[in-house]
Image 1: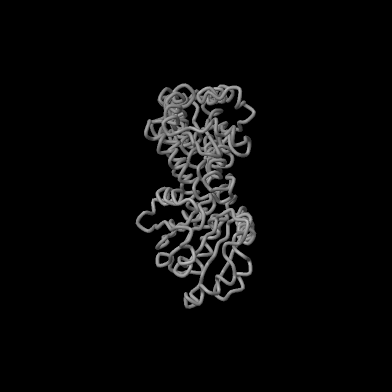
Image 2: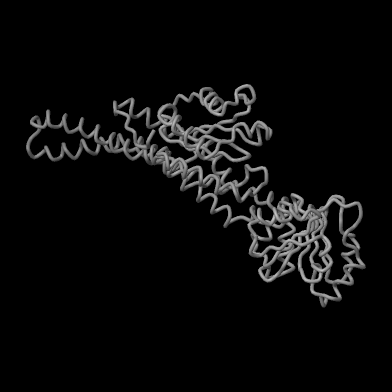
Amino acid sequence: MNLLSIGISHNTASLDIREKMWMSNDEVKEALKQLKGKYFNEAMLVSTCNRTELYGLTPDTQVDDAGLKKFLIDFKGASGVVTPNHFYGSLAGGSVSHLFKVAAGVDSMVIGDIQILNQVKEAFNLSTEIGAMGPVMNRLMQATLHVGKRVRTETTICEGAVSVSYAAVELASKIFAELPKKSALLIGAGETGELTMKHLIGKGIGRIKIANRTREKAEALIATLEAHAIGEVLDYEQISEALRTVDIVITSVNSPAYIVQPDHVRSVMKQRSNNPLFIIDISVPRSVDPSCNKVENVFVYDMDSLSAIVDKNIEKRKAELPKVTTIVREETVEFFKWHNSLQVGPTIQELTSAIEAIRHLEVEKNINRFKPEDRELVEMLTKRIINKILHQPITNLRNGAQNGARGSETVTRIKALRDLFGIEEKDTHGG
């Protein structure tokens, strides 16, 4: 099978190198247009912040990987910064297995990445738009999406927060069963605090309030979060009042002293009728006195406690790797069973037809040498001989096709048979 993959990722290159190779959707489509015909019959290109990978079906067994690396580097004008050594590549089963691992989220910087499957799907769609797909790549797309679905339904590798911001939101979801009925206050507009608020909005938080020393920055953040309908900007002096009504507090400020202290919280909790208050302190140094956690119905989590949750979840995800590996192996075998059948079926049919034509011609030439009452026996006998001769080669071909892990051996057998019996090669798989 002349499928190859070639790419650059976080495994082989630093961020500044990967940035040079990142492609927009328009660039992806233009690159594929130039690649199709010159290098590939079918192709697709995945480009994210962590990887740029090319997958394609070549018209012959000779692969110009050096030319492909040069093409990608030159296409992005990255000569002198990106070198061929930053790239990796594989062929046939290695390419299929690698793509399946990418879609499964086990080749990502964050194990169990849930975004990459959609990014791979988008890459297939872009390839389809410009006509760079074909029967093999279409089947590969279906198999890849199936791998992603199996991994997400048969394993828990995508479960459990693996970022501090999402860990905070998961905890909030456990404490408050109905987030759409709850409200949150963000004190400060730091990057992690903003990300946490985005996750809360994604979970359907009912109302949000943002207080920042610079009001304009808070207003800009509300606009960025596209939360006008549920958002409100407060002056810094209004924080105390907000603590009486909100359910979740996120602090992301740079303060020399604690801005939330136990006495303050105790006073607030009396006015809240002891309704739970969930405080996420993402400030460094901390802006919430850890002693607040001792106040009844107040739950305080800082960076260390959230990081511990993240580390535990990462270990749980790693424990699922054997299951994912099994799924990838099974689906790789299934894909090659399908691909091998494309070549095996026609070869068996054409081989049988070629031998039958020889048998029929020779019988026709010599049939008059036999008595009329023996001619039917000659016909039957010669057919049986041919069937016995072809039985083992056909059995071996079929067995090879059913064993996807030995696809290269099947291809070798097919080529040998076609060469031996003079059967012309036909394009049965788009390349």
